[in-house]
Image 1 (cartoon, helix red, strand yellow):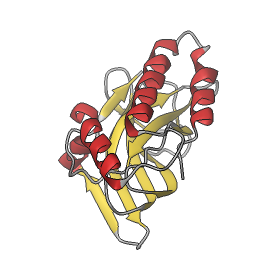
Image 2 (cartoon, one colour; image 1 turned 30 degrees about the vertical axis):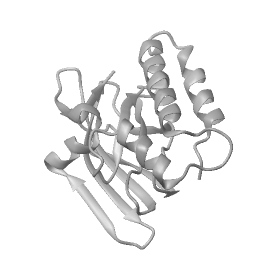
Image 3 (spheres, rainbow, N blue to C red; image 1 turned 180 degrees about the vertical axis):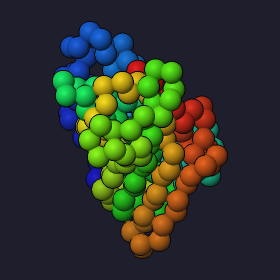
Length: 190
């Protein structure tokens, strides 16, 4: 499954027009474009395993990571208080991902954990459906309205569960989450 560059650019372009979110989305689009270039979604023959390994070595802080999230950011609130997450990840593992479940908590502007006004949940999650092969980068994935609470300004990644094609699972939680996100920052705010 290759990164859909057109869809990624449409998602970024559709939201850059909103001045209150413009700077954050331009940054997100810039980081996304850099990762796409770095990981090589160029036309032509698919890259060799050696080329993928070299690109991953340049893109990742640790070549032994099971997954890497170069970016994730809260999105919203929308007109009814729905807050979601934009996220991207890279598969540096030799095993193909079948699913990637990412769980988040949400915080207000003073960093207090808040609950959703609908469903009364503290944690909410995303589910990326693969397959995601070795070296593959997802592009921007947009998950809308994970919570309904207009006071949400930040999200914190708390757990990642990878299900591989052979049905084995890897759960990353606690301090291990810091290893798989950019600069060890598990929280992202708008």
